[in-house]
Length: 438
Image 1 (cartoon, one colour):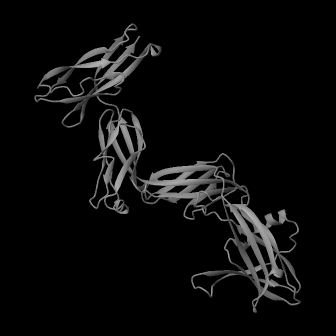
Image 2 (cartoon, rainbow, N blue to C red):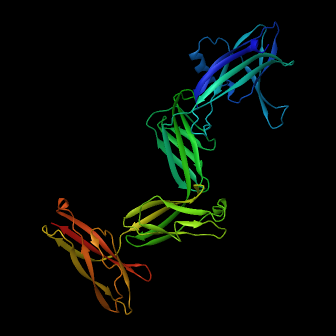
Image 3 (cartoon, rainbow, N blue to C red):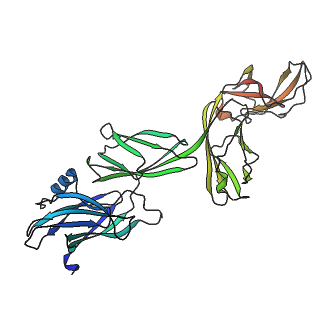
């Protein structure tokens, strides 16, 4: 009985696509009555948008009559009070044939959790019953295959935790419609489809908001899928520090209240840095998780001027799970240059040139200094920790100027020598060397 009143439709779609089609409903009785349409899948519904209906009529001119839907009823299901029945009511005249405009939305949820799955298959049905008897009149059975979309772009944004993120992304192509797999993310096309505005709230570090954005050609709905983007928003804790070139700086890394609770006691936590800058961690890059609050510190010795960004991750060593994330912004200024030395290396000299300079102690106490070079491959300090200097006196310091290849000559190089107080760690002064190679 059911096979005689069933109509089967098969569709192949890419995730994010919308399929519009028609379903012929016949009233075989010589009487008027109201029928009920019930879908067992929220993706399979009648068309109620005038724009979608006009698009379907332009594609299929054989749709000669459209039934009018009186209302949409969402009634509690008798089997479960938690579920909802998706129903519509439609009046049919005696012996009437109606082409029902239907839509099947493949959805935009990222359903492909397994990277190996390329498609997902299934079926859904629309049941048509005569009221009030409930006798079956027709069944629409739709078999679908939803394919994994091809990602055009993958954007990553790094932002501070628990903040509102607003980004305007220029588009190389013009699109008419856009929608997002995350309903809490606001996406809007601006400037006649040439600019995408993304707006959302970020979570606590180190959460990552990951969602898909679908772009379409038609301006009224998700008909012609043109592109699919994946967007990942990384939340981190922001830290800022200021220093001068050659001055070591320490930045404490504060864990959140619940960061270490996800790691069992005794499990190792490892710190990773995104930059090859001269740095190390205290008490070390690896430490055990415990109930006692741990505050590691990152030590940096920067030779680059300007603003630098450094991303640090705290990862559970066994599970390879990020438990905290920091973005450190470092502002590095120019040091205090107190002396400038001019050094000329003749063309025939291809060996190390020795240079002796005085290191002064103008105070009335004995002091000890530490010397570092901004470029040890060019200006080398054989004795980085010279002997203590008596009060109000000076100590000669031996330096080595390393040769460069003859292909690089003639040239002029600039190197800095930093003088740091061994006791306080503060940079006292710096010497500038202008080295000219003939």
